[in-house]
Image (cartoon, rainbow, N blue to C red):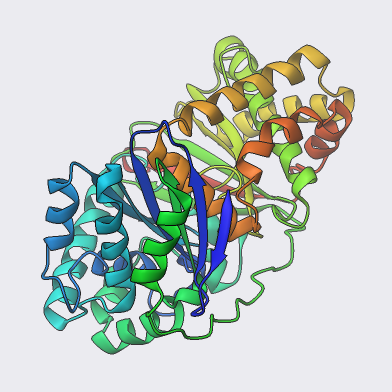
Length: 422
């Protein structure tokens, strides 16, 4: 991999893979749910939608047409700490893809008409994915409000209808000016590229975008819970109750090794039918119909900065109290903390995670996005390829120590109650 930094501050990551047959282009902006203004819940996601509504030089839908007519695919997504946009195109369309990303970085077409339209689109997305779906947004929308106290960490990143409808074109202009500057972004070009040619094309299309200082990112740290924090959410469509327990994690960037112990711990607890929670709680005791555990509220492990959350989730019958499931799970966690895993169990968890990592990043689209996210969040895209080796050095004692921090007396508990059970 090679890096270039343009005069306007844009960080560029070039990752050639000459046998890929396609090229991935991704732009990661250092702004996500945590950075949106108070009183504007869902604004970062809304702005992601607006970035697809044309620019000063291209009308609405032209970005879509140009990518698809080249045989490519594209999308964007909003995360806790970043927003990303990507396309995968044939190598011959590399310059077209770079032009399109540079074009909307330079001047998206933010109008009252586009804003009104996208507020309606996002509102409908919320109805479809959250309000009218069983367990919609569970647990990432409601659990943070139980675990955290600050607006940045606790609010609903999908957005409140009132907040979305109150957004103005001026709000959008200020958000773009503050966060969508080249100095606040990472451009990743991955796949079948010639590095020299790609560097020249990047400079040609991105080099003349006006540079503005990147915003100073505040610390979003806040005190860890010292007691059980509980809340209940009534779900109009859920057929069975559900629960989520959240614990704070070590800083994914500053305390990477300690964090990675929780990645393997999650696998031992819930990945596969032979895992501890699946076998003890679902198969043997039958107190839950499904159970899962691991780092990350949204996007999985290593997809956000501090604070991050270790989540235990389960779906259970109405006849089983939530705390019966939680107590049974905490017994398994305590056993791991006391005895630690044996080496075969550690190796199985490692093999499962690494296999999924390779499988997920085999395609250029996901690999380009992963490299860009690692570069933005951790400062080293190389971490993606280093993870298997790093995880292989995590010892059973370190995993036991991680399990020991999952204290049932210092966590957040969210109970989902079907409306019919009230």
